[in-house]
Image (cartoon, rainbow, N blue to C red):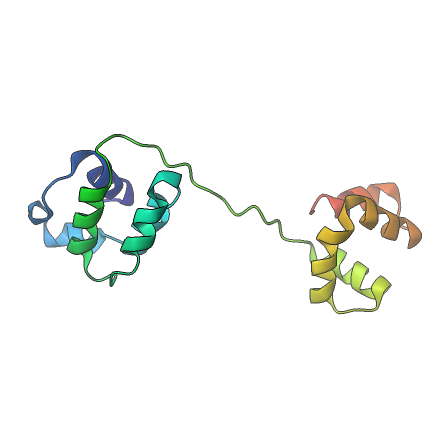
Length: 138
């Protein structure tokens, strides 16, 4: 069974835990089930509660989810990481300008914002085309 089959079992089918084979239980991944169910704001409290159970107690986790989550087809939008990685090159440029380390410069980039970084890069003599390329990473 795939993760999506398991999610469908928890939310719609709600089969008895004893109806699954050992191979089905081997395919169960507690972490991924928690992760996908937590994408639904209505299930966050349930997931927080169930995450305290040992991940190896697969049947217990399944049973709790099966009983606590309403029986209906749901679509859980996958929430992606909103933090963009700053380019190493931009961090190094900011670090040399401010005489600080690259890691510290990475934390300054969001504070400076696009306008501040554009100003710093302009002061250093970068052309508009180069500035645009570097700012894309923000």
